[in-house]
Image 1 (cartoon, helix red, strand yellow):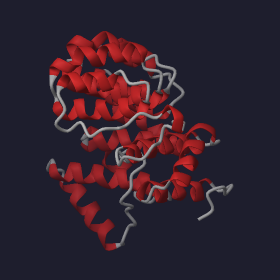
Image 2: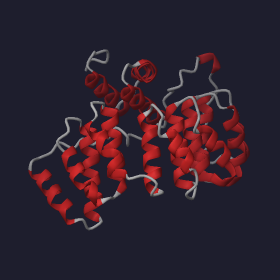
Image 3: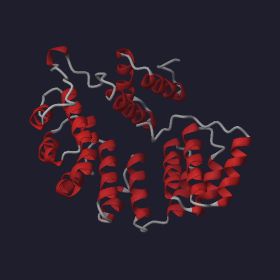
Image 4: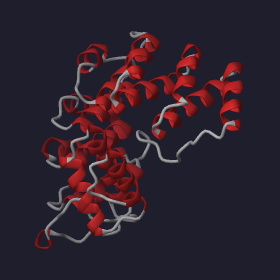
Length: 291
């Protein structure tokens, strides 16, 4: 496995290999890919990989030894202690405390998290933080979530838009239309799904040209939105994506057909049986669904 290969597929395989078996040298590689790679897709993939690795206790933030603070197990900690850790200068400590707050689902921590949001300088923590606000109390944190839709980091923007879509009770259509022009493919995917759910956008008509794009990210975005939409009219488009050279696109098409099959679309059953007979190569690891 050549981690410095000029072939993006080699680098992509390297990202997946490190996420499965992380080590300090591999984490440095992920950080470099996440910030410097020529491929938007690989930068995004490495970011998601770092998020997964951080959940296993590895240091993905690159904190200098002299700046490190103890990362304590907060499983049985008091709310006061969790809140204190949310204010730590060490991003590893803040990230762990935020994860514990999410799992506790105690709304009394929301005020501390909203205060944290106004000052948080680390993009990986902001990307997680906006999701936690949505889970603990969207109405109280709606203004903060909306502000994150304009964050400098695309992953933070995408997560904020998803939270707006899931918890916003049909609000924010004008925001989704505005963000639909974003350069980042994941941000656009969040907007397309939100607008389709609001019946403000024809999902099939919008995604069809995306599947013909030379860009992997554009095709991946299109099939992702179609696979999640549950629209029987997407069936021939999903079927055509089963022959894609990229496993992540085949995965989404296959999962979309399974969703249609479960919804009672009989044509999807036949396509899935044919795909199984031909031994279509479905990769376990999905580009969008890594975390």
